[in-house]
Length: 288
Image (cartoon, rainbow, N blue to C red; front, side, top):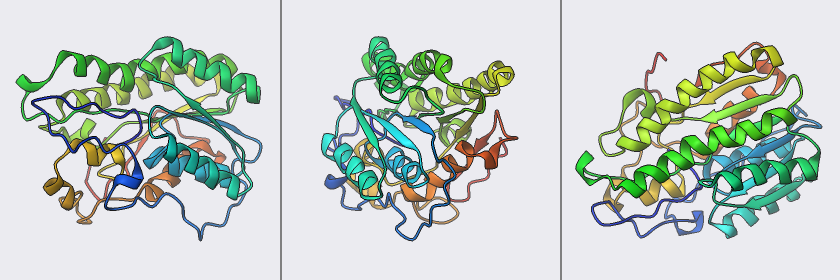
């Protein structure tokens, strides 16, 4: 569960007093592998990443930049985290464009693509990663406004951004959508979120068939429990102490452990893969 279009919590929902930044987390997420030796897998590529200000998106943005890509990063809140992402990228000699915006709005989605293309000229890699979630104890507790926003951010935005980006993506481009282990296993307190993640799996598979003739590959990544601000803001303090302990590896993952899945799918290493989903989830068996 992930990333950067942060949830607002209302009565009837768990409230961790809105952790919106990595700096507010007791466990600081690891987003950069300082021992990584770049090999130029993405040299000359242009990447647009939503939810790139923190968590998984941040780790992906940093890794892509280290591998040679120029990166446009959308974020909603958490400006300090986003600027830290930019600073990390520049530390490694990379180039980053920060674009703040609430992608629950169609106009913002289309402007995001326009700004990226105006700045870089095209898009080679699109990472639809931003998401939001609201913890509820039962289906009766789901608020309509939260239900609508969850689908707007997690699904509608993905479609709007992809619609706008595809005309600017040359042959050999890659689209990578972030789904979740909850799409396959379900989650009793994340009903609407899990439904959006299931929709993303179906969208990824369908879009891969739709864009195959354009030689644009479409794949997904379905992380398990990962240390991110959104995950921490969705559950209470006691639950967070045991984050990920129910996985076979008995721990939550770090964003830096998920980012290589995106790099693989973005690079030529995955040239014969489309319509597939990778599962960095701590060992849970998915078969899907």
